Length: 131
Image (cartoon, rainbow, N blue to C red):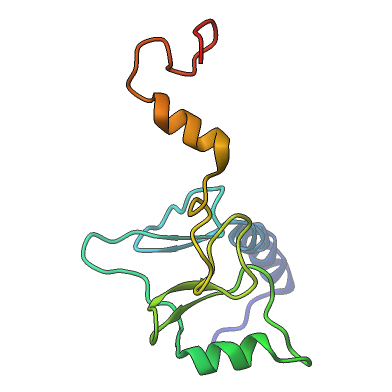
């Protein structure tokens, strides 16, 4: 075993410390050695996909009903039964959760008027044109 002098140890530390600090500030890349700077995680593949945690409806409901450890906003799972889907456990603004009606199932008068005039000259809904 070789022993390094104190000066050599300090030089190695001075050279390696900035590299370690830089590695901690960048994102993680899977399938790439240069992940995009705006991404915490970048996955590149032309033959494989991302596999998220898979839970049944009962398991998902137990997760979201936990009073001691409620899921963090943004947690995503794949529900495997009933209506298989990607399920945000706390919901995305404007998204439809399983069992909820589609948000345009009753479009209201404004949407109906747009649909009625679609395709007719002068009713394109653009500024300066009658709508």
